[in-house]
Length: 327
Image (cartoon, rainbow, N blue to C red; front, side, top):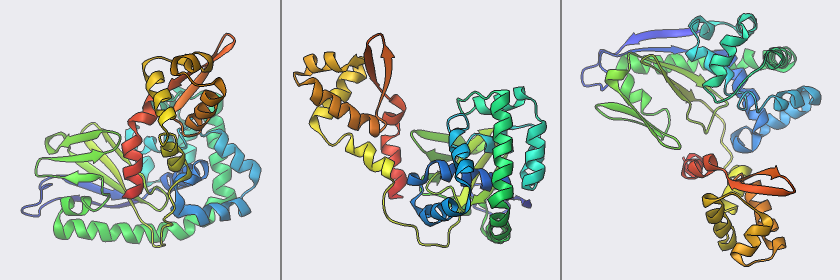
């Protein structure tokens, strides 16, 4: 649903003259909910909701949602249809109409969107994604949307009024601690810094979600910037995500750091690491298990040996993940 379109006319606003649009998409919110189902440990503020879903939703359906986690990037790939697809009116559709529209897209169109997320999608996977999404909507999320939608629309209308009163820049600065505005650009801080000069932005799109904290969601395409404001009235639990604890536990040992350093330079087997580092194979195996659980190393079979290597993406995201939780 389109909340409003605005052109910044506030003197002194860094986004003066820039156009913006606020909308609420129940489809994006449903995909965000499915993302939380796949990754509950990361969304500690939704722990109670996850427990309720376990009680109310058929286990087989929850397993289907999780089974599609890899190809959908934990359900964060499908929402890109709202930003990067040619038919942008899908943003303003209800869930049933939006799923019907996505179902009608050919597989080439799906592949273009999924490639943006470094994923491939097959025709059979596309059909499963649509089928599982429809089931989740009909069996559970329909009732959830009835509650969420009017609250989100009211909240986003307040944001729109703030735009009209103070300009877009001030309100955008409050979206997330890792989104910063200056007099020249907008900067997103994730695993690295993403800089967007105002000269490279014609329009800013903003929507809202009750599920996506602590993520900072952003996108940039054809001089259009897209971001999501998180809304939550409940007190968020303070416990850190399990995966974050495991990630840093993997670094909290001198031997594990030595193994990581060695694997960073060259993938290796347990046997060869044992000889190289002068420790027993059993000790190396034990530490590799901890590193694997933390997502810091990957493994693949090569002949009779299991070869371990560093997960470069996990290393790149180390600072980002701890910062994300602290914020």
